[in-house]
Each structure stands twice: as structure tokens, then as C-alpha cells.
Image (cartoon, rainbow, N blue to C red; front, side):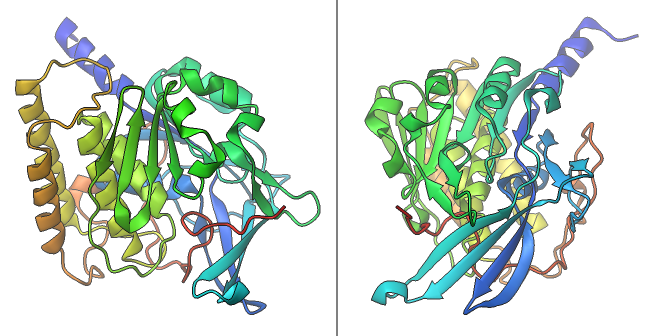
Length: 381
């Protein structure tokens, strides 16, 4: 017999799950007219990787073709008549006479878009719209808003367009898209500092929270009544691929577990910094993950003692925020330099989900440079 309390607890646990919407991809790095590496891509892969690490359950809706190469944590929808979305990233060191690598990104193959009918009927507390190849339609985002209490959107899912001849990625102003009228109905819009110039932050912040990531400088949170800078974490950068996605995963994972927005953004910065220190999809040290999870729970209880508990996002810096940052810095410093021996073999990284879960392949080929996320895309007029 299930008691009322048990039923309520089960209902709360079910509703706390996160819905991630975005396609997996194949990324190809091309340099000097030669293929340098091929890797699993797509924001969904990096975000679910973080969720697995901190034991946050989720459902993930993604579409791939029968040619999809990689074992992943959440089974995608396979479209037999189409191929998996493929991005080619062309890197030219010192292009235009500067010292950094410029990039031209092309979507050379596109799988089926994710439609409202592809989304589950279940209600979710949080939804994440994280497309990379134009797979999220305005009507799909609107359906997410209907079935999720709070929706988080990555601006790259909203402002990317693709050349009809060669698939070159271009960015358009947010107000020119079919998503613009939906902004007052979403909770958080995330953008990199390069992407943020394609929207009027001062206008958008009146409708929803805006989080702008800025690499080694941390991030900044804007909301209607204020703004707040969030401290970064030092990192020895090896590969910036997916850093923004890992940030987004850590940020939402913190909110799911009851943290205030500033503390959740710190958690996002931590996972972003951990991501850039490895090539490709990162493997997190299990001892670090356990320390972080324990501290997050302690932090949650500490905040509950001082603040009113409700479902509203809390933007003000909570008591002990700096100490939380200090703890995370120290926890990261305790992490071994090499994590080859710390694969996904800890019970703490095992979660229950309605979808089939299989371990990430840790021996897959990985990109040696950023394919699609954090480096600025060369603007094509």
C-alpha cells in the first residue's frame, strides 16, 4: 500500500526531472584541407554527461540517423531514412593575420527536426532547449513551455541559420526569429559573450533571466531588477569544445537540487572549467563529484534555514556564496591531474531513468579543437 506521503514524494521526485531537447551530432574537424578528428557532438551529449555525474535524472529527446556512431547515455530516436546531423569545422590558424584560430562552421547534413509530437506527455519541472543544427522549431519550444514549469533555452538553438548551398552557419538577430515572441514565457536564456551581441540584453532581461558566459572571466547573470557577476575557476585549457554546454548542465543541475541562481551559476562555471581541461567529452573524477554533491546538499540545507522556500528562482547572492566558491576551488585542486583511472564506475554516477542508459564510450576519437560551441564563428554577410 502506498501512503499519501509516499505518493506525494514520488510525484515530487517525478516532476523534478529535466527534459533535454536537442540532437546528437557527428563533428568533423578540418584543418589545412585535412580531416584531423571526428567526435560525438551536440549540446545534449555534454549536458547529459554533467547530469550523470551529479546524479540528476532526465529525459532526453534527440534524433539521429542509422549511421549514428556512438554509444550514449540516453537512447535517441532513429530516423531510418535520414543521416545523423554532421558539422564540419574549418580551422585556419592565424587567418586574417591575427594570432587566434578563426573558424568557419558548416552543417553538411541535417537530421529530422524535433517536433512537438516527439516530446513526451509527462510534465517536467525544467526543460532545456539546446539544439545546435536548427532542429528545434518555434512550435517545439512552445510545447516545451506548456509541459515544463521553467524552460531554459540556449540562444544558439534560436539564432543559427544555414546557407542553402554549403550549410555555412550564420547568426541572425534574435528579434528576427520565430522564437522572439516566446521569450516572455521562458525562464532563462543562455548565450556566450559572442552570441549576446545578437540580442538586446537590456530589453530581453525584462522578460526572462539572461546568463552570458565569458570563458575564463566567468559569467554574468541579468534579470529584471539587477545583474550579478559570477566568479570563474582557473583551468588549464586543452579543448574548449562543449564548455558552454557543460556550464549549462552544471547550472541547471544546481537549480534542480535547490540552489539559488548565483550558487547554481558557480556550479556551472566549475563544470565549464573541468570540461576545457580535457579533449572532447570529459570524464569527471568520481571523488570530486562526490565532494561536490555532498557540498551542494549541505549548501541547500544551509540556504533553507535562512530563506523562504518556494519554486521561484532566487537571484540575490545567498549567505555563504563566497565560501561555496572557496570550497569548489579547493575541491577541484584536490582532483588528480590525470583521470584516466577514474572512469564512470562509481555508483554515484548511476541514475534511474525511464530511458535506456548505457555508459559513455571513453575511448572514442575526440576533437582536438573546438568544433562548434565556444570559439567565435566567423560572421558571413
